[in-house]
Amino acid sequence: MGETLREILASSRRIVFFGGAGVSTESGIPDFRSGDGLYSRDTGTRHAPEEVLSHSFFTRHPAEFYDYYRSHLLYPDARPNAAHDALARLEASGRLDAVITQNIDGLHQAAGSRTVVELHGSVHRNSCLRCGARHGLDTMLAGTGVPRCGCGGQIRPDVALYEEPLDEAVLERAAEHLASADTLVVGGTSLVVYPAAGLVRLFTGDRLVLINKTPTDYDRFATLVVPGLIGATLAAATAGLV
Image 1: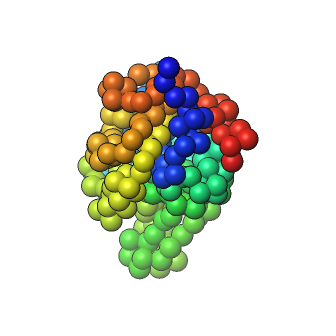
Image 2 (image 1 turned 90 degrees about the vertical axis):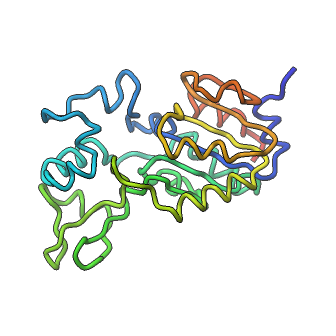
């Protein structure tokens, strides 16, 4: 009989968690590819979501981009769920080395996680394209149209758009954590978005755990596959452990 998730977590000392949009759905933030996900919803324009969230669209139609960005990607009232809380406790116990996330919502930090590698950036970081001044989420929420800095420059979110490369330094940090992990827990991601999903291949540790509502191409390599909601799964596995 194989190990349970609780047994794996209890016997691990260098866990890395790799998560996607499914980690935040229990906080009321939609994922992208499920039946009721972001990509199945009307954008309010004649363009598909993937096009609206591309670098070329951002450059050509900034006002339309920001209208969509504010209404579909910003959830200022969202709060950490059981998955975020369990991972923060697991880190505090000394078992979890890092969270590597494809999410941009900042909920891992809000739950108390300290070592968080944000592959696609964060809605909480924004900067002026002219003077480089930093701005918080409140600035993006405050108005309509193209957000402007006090200098008159356009404010851009620190979020990776389609057609843009991921930050090399961030990718290197993620690779270092994966290379030193003895256990990798992957949750809430279909592992189809590259180059982020390809990072999983850098893991050479002992045990790979996959927690997802639907099967992935990596299931056949896993020590343990747990179908279902990640919040309830991690809460149950860590109860009394941390």
